[in-house]
Image 1 (cartoon, one colour):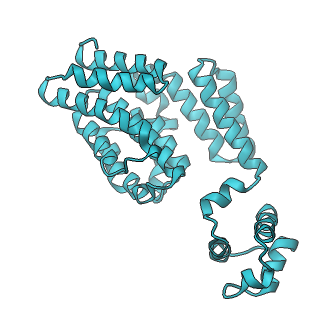
Image 2: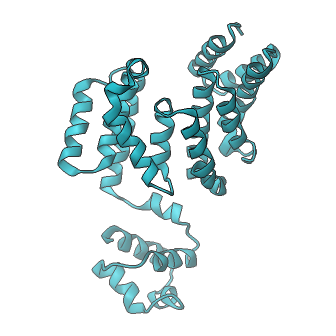
Image 3: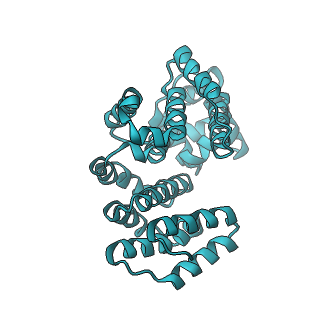
Length: 287
């Protein structure tokens, strides 16, 4: 609350709005003053009403908050994925995440530990799932218990799609992820939706699962044709062609070549190579 109150005060004074003006019709001036200066608690609705009166969205407010804890978590996530993609994710590093979980009892750290463990041992897991049953069941139960997913849950789900069966993935697409589509024009959720859909399309293609691939593609269809979804949309055509191949064994090479050219011109050279390898793995056809 301390940082929230200080930020509200700064946003208010920057806009030359007095406490009385901001509080009018929302709360008493004393309530606002106490929140700004003495850092007392405030209901979320009152905070949202203050922000709305200053024409500031909750998303903008969250970005402006200087939260050291949030910054630490963000940096940790960035470090985690950098290590993963650079193939420097070690067992010692994962163990340190597990130890931090035991110290704090914050599931955030254990989720990174589990993701790293399962991602590093994906082939082993697919051969002997029972060996990781404890970790898998913990993830499944955690996601099942939460009705309304946020960024944390969506990332956890999309990164570990391979631990779920087709029926479970389909259920979460219909009952969880579709709820997020109502926020499709929000930059925060646009990036999140793109990652989830593309991870799903790649996963379904790797497994030659036309049913799931179509489910993920259908999620992308109603999304607006705006710069927010450029990265997703240039992949949509490619995955649609893979879906058509899985249905009919017919492949339009020209469509795929044009999609790959656009992706390369957009600056995703390494990803372009990965997509060519994926297409070959699915179709046995070189593009």
